[in-house]
Every structure is written in C-alpha cells, then in structure tokens.
Image (cartoon, rainbow, N blue to C red; front, side):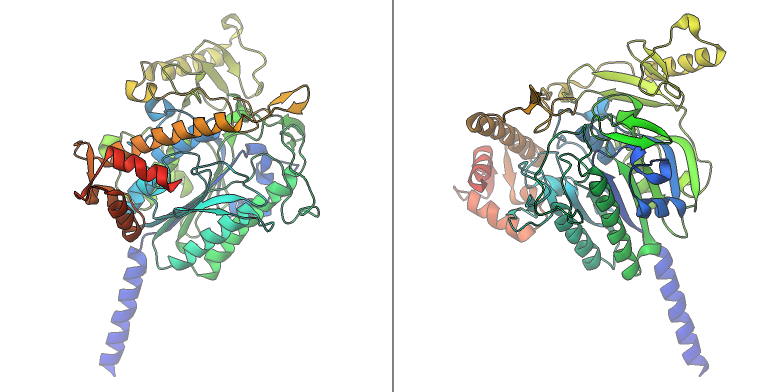
Length: 530
C-alpha cells in the first residue's frame, strides 16, 4: 500500500512540475481605430464595454499608452519592437528583413496564429515568413469589404462570402477554433481585429443589420456604438472560450488600440465632447486603451500612469514567456511586465515618435512627450494636459520653471534620436494617398459633399500589379539566404506553413526541373496564383 501511495505522490509531483514549467499562452488583441475615450473604464461615456471594463477591474489598466496616428505605422512598431525611424518603409508594408514577435515565439516552441486585419503586404507567404503557422486575414492580398459579405484569405485561399456573413464573426470563430485545437499549448494568438474601422456599419446585433446600407465617413457615429459593443462582445467570447477550456489561468491577455478613433467621430469623455483624432499627431490620434489580464499572475485592479508605447509589447511578451530576444535586434521597446505584476518596473520618462506614412528620409511629425508636455522637432511646445488638441503653442518667455525643465528634458530626448534614417528603408518610401475612401489623414474623401469616385479599374489594377510584383521580389530576396539568385527547396520551404502544399507548388513552378527556382520561375508562380 505504501508503494501505491508513493507512486501516486510521485505522479502528483510530476504533474505539478509540468504545470509549473509550461509556458503561458499569449493572446494579443489590437482594435482598429479605437481611441482611449472608447472604453468606459477610461472615462468614456458614449459606449458600452463591460467585458473590457471587467478585464481592467480584475487586471491592469494603463492611462498613458501611445501608438502611431495610423494603422500600418503602429503595426510595424508593435510586431517588431522598433520605432518607425528604424525600420518603416511605407504604408501597407512590413519589410521582409524584419523579425516579429511571431518569429520569436515560434522559435520558442509556440503554435502561432494571426487572425484579423493584416495590411502588411508580402502576399500569401507573408504571415508564415513573419512567424505565423496559420492565418485568417482581411487585407492580405486585396482590400474587399470586411463586414457584411466579406472577402478574406485563410491559409493561402481566397474566400468570398455572400450570405450576409459578418467578417468579424468569421475571424472570431477561426481564432476560437485555433485556441481549441492548440489547447495543449503553448500558443500565441495575435488578434488584430477588423473592428472598429469605418465604414460605421450595422453589426449582427443591430436591428437593421440585413437592411442597413454601408455609409462612409467618420464624422457621424452611425453604427459606431454598435460596433464598439460588438468588439467588446467578441473579446468576451474569447475569454469565455479560454475559461471553457480551463486555459484562463495560463493565458496572458493584452489589449490595445492601433490609433485614435476615426477622424472627427464624436464621443463623450469625462464630461466633455471630444473628437476622434486618427491621422493626427495630437493625443487624440495616439492615445489608446491598454489592458493586461492574467489571473494569479498580474495585479488586480491596478491603474498605472506610466508611459508605454507599441514597441513595448514585444519585449513584455518575450519576458513573460521566457523567450530570448536576439541582442542584434536592439529593441526600442521596454518591458512593462513588472508593472503588470504590480511592481514599480522601469517607467519611461518620455516617449519618442517619428511618423510619416509615406516613409522616406524625413518625418511628417517628430516629437517627444510625456503625460504633461509635448515638444516637436520643429520647436512647437505644448502643455498637452491642458491643451490636448494642441491649439496654443507655448512661447519660451511664458514658461514657468516646471515647463522649462520639461522642455529641456524633451529636447534631450529628441537629441538622442537625431541623425539620418537607414537608406535601405528610406529608398522604399511610397506616397500614401489614404486608405480606400479616405485621404492621407483618415478623412472621408469627398467632393462637394459626395464620395470621391474610385480609381479607374485599369489604373487600380496596374497599381496593384506593381505592388504585387514588388512584394514578390522582396519575398524572393528574403528567402534567397545564400544570395545566389535562385531558391533551393529548403529555402523555399523555410517560411511555408504547409510544407506539403508548398513543396507541390515548388515542383510545379520548377519548369526546367533543376531542383531550384530562378527569380523568373518564382515571379511566374505569383502570376499564375492570381
């Protein structure tokens, strides 16, 4: 009998040790065009966000999380841990030479998935190249509708829906299925949601979902409150799935917005009327919600005024999962894991931003700031605590001792980031004309009050073809590890999620059957895929 007890005791110890050694799962949620004022826990008064409010109340909420004013610039920072001055090329693109948190966690043994909005080019192979085993994405190789009757790309296949399906639901279902299939973990789910970007369309919970017409623009709320509520609901579904699978206590959950709310979207915030600032460098363009929750590991009900930005999420995730970060990456980000645990950590004294959606050698806006003041490289200086719309620049003669000290501090911050950009990234710049239906600042394109006409099909097709060709050249160069101008099967398979399918494609494309793909054969493969 004693032997039986000894065996059982040994088994329990082994199970406890296994549980202790198991790495945590990670879910990172990025909400599209979702400013700080949208969450009730932050002081928002226009929308219902009970799930996010509860996660904040039982976790950690940050009052000073800042990102870039537009989608792609933030996504590049978030995924690589580097500021835009270091590695940004142009809107809608992530250079294939970069390493992302997907690459790092995959190398650490994580099953990886990205589900939602991509907007980073690099074709069907892009997600795998950046470390994701599987994907369900919108705006991977095209930009169809995202909401009712969407067009998506799922693991190399284009899917078009026409039975009133709702894009965010399809993506949500895929994300939950991934979690279920990978429940024995560890897994990393990067969930860049398609909501709440314009058009402010009806959701399946809106009474007029089947009859409402899509309306562009962001200066009228239309169904934005419904979209915010639906975003919160989908986050709730994900949390419920983790609880159902008994994974909640071993899953680190982080939530943030990718930039300010759509330009001009009216909201109530702490008793005042505010307007969404997407595309602007004001606080309403960069200030976003940030929430962390991990039962038993993160603090509960903690609120921090510490400064964090998009570059900080990669090092935080890597520290929490004991994932090594190669020293040569020289991250700009700083882990805020200590704060998530309720500790002091190493708070930043200021944040620095270099912003230009075109890319190029010079910034559209370059500034350093903290929670009180902001200094632009042009010399404009604002008290953003009192003047968050930046209407009244401060003259040196009017500065008191506190403001003088703040300005000196921010001048030193800008000085630390002085110098030219890497020519490799500068030469890849492209003029940003705005997303479909918007101008470069996120405003609805219009003429005499009407929606601007879309580009002629031939012109749009030609531009898309040029972009697709550039993307394939970049992917070829990224895979050509020994720089001999051809790809071996091993090089071709290095970024493939489905090795079997990729090998079949390789063999079909290898027309001269020499066991390699020339640049021409690789480019032709891309043309045939269309």
